[in-house]
Image 1 (cartoon, rainbow, N blue to C red):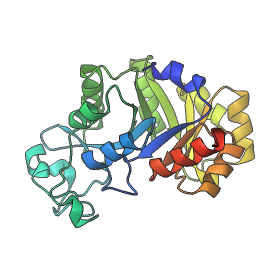
Image 2: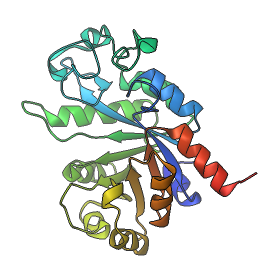
Image 3: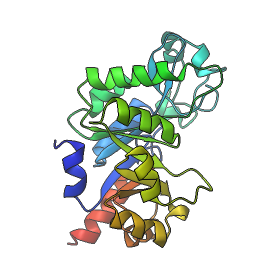
Length: 258
């Protein structure tokens, strides 16, 4: 695999599996990651949280109840306690017993097959935010994924911190709702390579500004052919979707029709 810095300019578009293949399997689980990889996604996007014993897990929410049979805050529970929970049945009984994976477990599946996109969540109440960042970076460097990982965040200060600490890292700012700044204005402040926004925020002005300033565009969440055509018309490069198999199929048909 090419390092991410070489891969991005070498392709017209790339497909990002949002929380794996979260439209067809329980989000942020190994099953979802596997389906994302099997569908042909170029990159797998995952959310990460810190446990009470300072382990990094793949999980979206700050509380356990929505996607597991547990209760309470993630940061108050240990890795072993969290991994004893059922993270699949809420989606379908087919996935009963699916666990909440550690970031290392997810990377074992992804490494060498696809790129990784980690969304760094903003600081939480009573959390030592720097420990979370340090543990994420420790995992990425230990697994030699630093050149194959895109760090994205609504918390632009975290991305600026990462860039100052490790200029080799690849970052993309996620647009904060109601922030009217253009991609180039944000990039000039934090040094990011990419700019990500929702499909409704992907205006022509933002698109033109990004292209003129060599900033690549990412867009979420693209689940239909209509959304894909709109994203492509605005020159989006990173296409985040809950259905990577579907979007890969649309792109293949568009560029390589039989």
